[in-house]
Length: 261
Image (cartoon, rainbow, N blue to C red; front, top):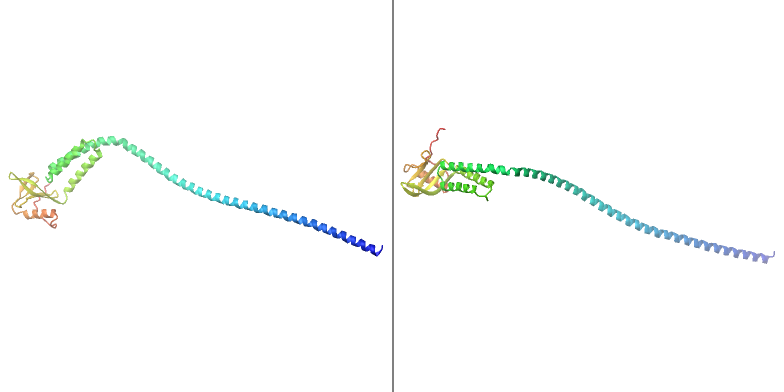
């Protein structure tokens, strides 16, 4: 083979090799592009999946928070309902007690009315036998209590309360000093006098001009004149003390001696 032919064959071989190399490179480039495109597609799909996962995680977290809130509310309602149930149970017991009391009201009313009447009778008898101070006022009070007995618009409880109040007023009369003005029959004529009550121990009077003084005699149940000048100053001083016009001090008063029982 000649040199020229050898060169020609060599060149042809090189050309064929170059073409083959170019073809292989082109094939490899196409394959790499396909691989990169697939990778990018996977990355996009992964991003979408991550976004969906994040959204689901947020929704799950919100639902969990709502669930915890609801659980707390349910626990609070359970405690509140338990307390209400105890209150309802106590109220039911109270209702039963009230119903039992109501059933006794008629019996109590039947027993209370005779008791009130006996108390008024006893109070009237006591006032009649007591020292006759504020006699008109006390008699009017008893008359008012008797008038209430026949009133249908006044409950038995109110009638009983009125009698107790009258008894309490009578009890207070036995304490302290009091003075008031009134009239008394002296020698067949009415004279205006100042009365002085010292508890229930003594009841005395003195005319307005201070000339005559007297005392209520429990044993005789009558007014008795006192010796002129014996107690005039003491009674006058006692009247001023009762009116809070003078300071309290010891007074020489006509007090009956104690009696043996």
